Length: 111
Length: 114
Image 1: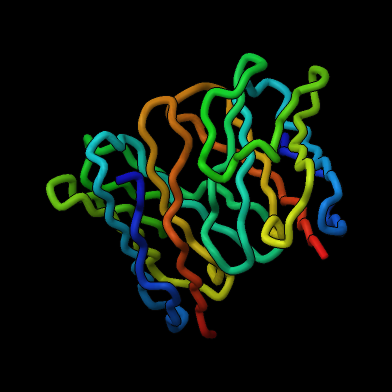
Image 2: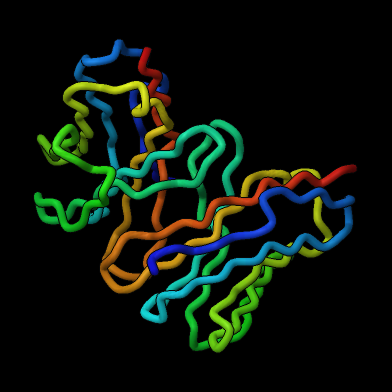
């Protein structure tokens, strides 16, 4: 029940396109949903996060959409750029517990 | 911008040997974590540490693992007798408060067990 399922495993998008990564969870106690971006040889870095009391959060080209009833959330990257090529992890947490990460999506944005 | 620093960046050890991975969390952070990432796989939680004691640990964190905050700045992960399957990237992370404050990761130590 602590799992977070992430899809797709890999994604290729043309420059300027929209990248969409999806995550689903089962534990209804999760109450914080961050997305992390990881470049090769680096640690994950927080990109954007959402609480379940809102359905959408936007920061620049990055948007999280959250569907509490379906227990799903997704990351949308608008106007995708080659510099966005990285691995993206969704995560979830409740209270004092540690983050549970999804399996990751390797995004490649082609110029 | 303050960052979490980890040393060494790469550690090669023989099976059965002890290794210590070192981390310097961000100075005003109170919560410390170790995660690991086997090549190409997900980031897995190992242990969290607060107020000089373990606050949560995963099934992976068995008796071969231990953590310590020996002074006011360092946070270490010790593996007593390494196994081949311990080969992974080990990430230290810290955050300021419990709950929803951002978790900051170091760049990791790549552990290779031969």
